[in-house]
Image 1: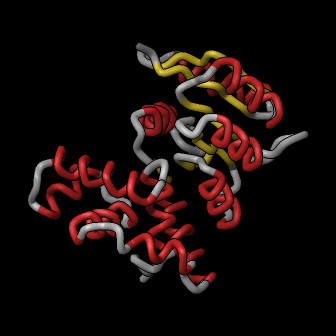
Image 2: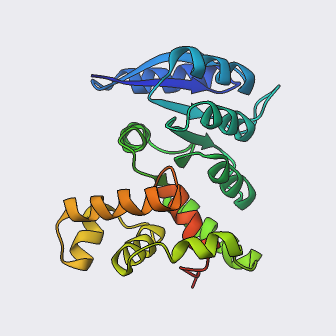
Length: 219
């Protein structure tokens, strides 16, 4: 089955360009378009796409607030944020709002299509440059870890804690498996269990949790 995608951007040419690029893929279909955040929320509820491509700066309701509403209404929703703005504040806010990935608009057609596939499969996606900025933002904030969240780390086994730390460093399941010398299916099991124990929706939220509780500290 094709991956159903909703494109939300206030520029018609951008929406149409993304639609052309994605519809050219045999496994991806653009099922709807939205010209602002409010329309994106309504379209997501009506169409229930597998992935929402979300611009950040839009009229009526920005992409961050639209993402928050979409995820609140459907916790399993996958939002891939696309923007020309790679400022730390937008990265952090979008991920905290529930976005599953973040790509800059200068990404190639191949990167865009692969990003949709990665997010649709339940993985987290952060552009390499954005990941560095995000880690830098945690280092800059230097805030004390939140006690309630920090206590939840104690619910994890030693192996789950180790896997969480590696997830926060951006490693894939295959890379974690190679690092720990275990099977990839074993890693997937650990990831699913730690997400369930911590009440987190995906790997992106897990990475944020790891940094906020100081399980992992930026170097």
